[in-house]
Length: 268
Image (cartoon, rainbow, N blue to C red; front, side, top):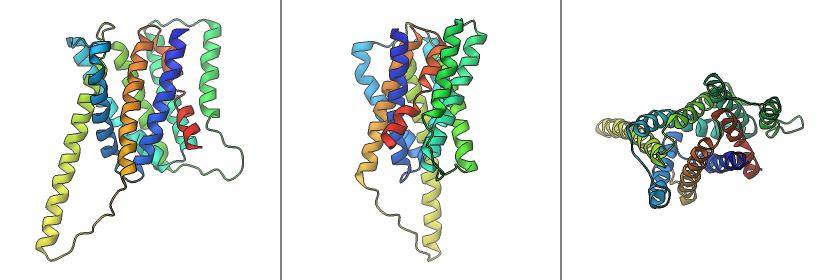
């Protein structure tokens, strides 16, 4: 029962994080949103070490690192898909894919689910789709770009869940701390390269006598949204590793896939 509660809590908190991330991504590039959210989440996790502990063993370092690479790609794609929208379609699509990928892996590794449990899991997957259903004729269909970002996000999130499950069960917060560190590091490097390119381009334009376009100032509330998204996302990571250490990957991944519920409730 505790596994179910933790899995469902994970989904809600992930959904809250995605809502605030999507808001920020409307004004700020998704990669930048993911980077700064990752940094704020990392700082939050570091404050929890005295309470929850962290053992940085070789297994925690390896699986946390792989998870960080997948997370950097997945969350960037997720925020991009949510910014494109509509949230009620792209969010459940990514969620279903993020559940199916680890569920297949979990079952192949020996996870056992009773017949009633299997029926329940199928019902939850259907619920993930229905939770985003909006009756009526004026439903905006997602673009191909939005769908591709959603699918990529789902696969990436599924890989994150799989790799976190592989980390040692006695490693505490170490895997998610490494996840955050690697993800933020990769995205920070990418942003630094973009900034250098932009600086060089502006220098060339200035040398040729052309004026560079000034972008409007971004309101502070969007940066606050990034901060909140990072804290919620890091909290969801903690709930998830707690859940998989009590239950199995197949069940927890499907419960986690209910994260559109939190996103859509807040969006509406």
